[in-house]
Amino acid sequence: MLSNKELLIIANLRENGRESLTLMSRKTAIPVSTLYERLKHYTGDVIKRHTCLLDFSKLGFHTRATFFLRVSREQRDQLQKILTNHKSVNSVYKLSHGFDFMAEGIFQELKDVNVFLDQVEKQVPLQDKQVYFIVDEIKEEEFLSCPEYLKLTEKKESI
Image (tube, rainbow, N blue to C red; front, side, top):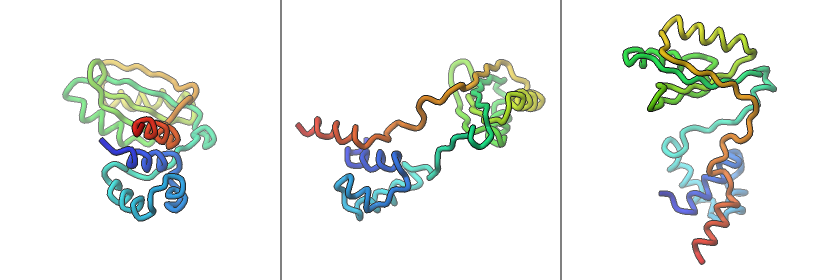
């Protein structure tokens, strides 16, 4: 488990990964040298990669769908390869109990979802599938991204 100081560093990074270490140091009261060393240590381990969150609809991708898919045991590796290599698939998760994979796809139009599913089913016979369309994004990538909350819990722990 990470210390409160380490969680505070991570929360600040998740809140704004482009913030300078100097500003982060002022906000957290953690020396810049410590921040630098922690970031160096986390990179490639705790921090998988640096990225940005996009508003896909403003880029012309107005349809998002989540797919739950089940195939025979023999077909799992092939389906995983298809999903991970498809340009419209944003995320893929291996599941237990019921379905084998959950995948999120980003598409320009509704018809593109059907084209995608037809392509998948031509390559791998699906035993079961469920498709859910994402209507509105309410919360995304928020876990461990609130430094203020961590500061409050840290104060409570020290009392």
